[in-house]
Image (cartoon, rainbow, N blue to C red; front, side):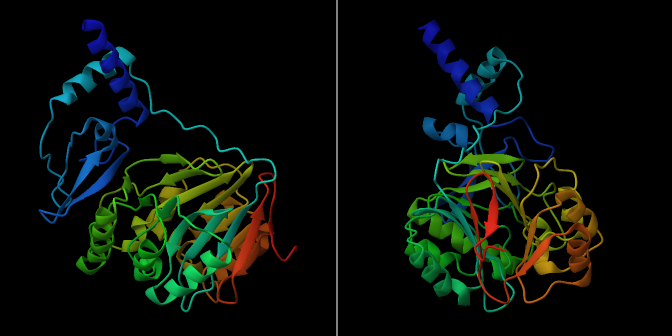
Length: 347
């Protein structure tokens, strides 16, 4: 019996350690939470992933972030942490490009300046933002055209309508296995956008993952690294943007949401690999950190999800020899073989 208890404690502690240590952000105790929606009580709470298999909830109220309840199993985790040692969070294995398996990255042309990016390998996909509501049918058409039948991860970088507008239609139309979004507390109108999507996910049993520090996932064909905002409150919603690093073998792509100056300065602190493709933040609008962030990322290709980029962005591209693409003109698609990335026009 004693051996069994120690074994359970050991692995419980090991699992908890692999999720990461306590973050700098007040109120957080793990490197991500899964959002659960209680349909009967019509309320939301966060659930520590480590406790999910044990059928226990350690919740935090979304508005106040006050602890709801400490569960007895926590003592077992503490004991496990002690016997497994104070290690840092574990890292998931690198997603290796399968021989002959291409990954396609498609930036959709939208009605207005909006983000909708489809990254696919065969029938499977990862989607970063869904454009406006009016772009939803166009997005579904592109998925059908490419023979995509499911979405492994849907990233909603922040709650602006030009990034989440087509999400509801997508959730109704295709199997979506995970939704990843930032913690957001700001304008009530924008909070309600996330609220409605979270309720839909809850009813469908789709986990909503809210990272609170660097978080990784491996789809088998892509390695995904998410960099969430470093604060829990910003004046402007764009600064809540998740940044996502997508790696396919030796090819690395960096998507910076709509990061404004404050969020861009946070991104300057990251340690990134050599970037092949850069989704320029905020539809090519410049801020005081734009030039410095461009120099840090130093990509081969840059994409602006708009009809035009501001002069600072165009100048950075010219100075660094970066080829710039604008989605206001048309869809742009890139292909990765895990070693190189190139645009489908062959240039």
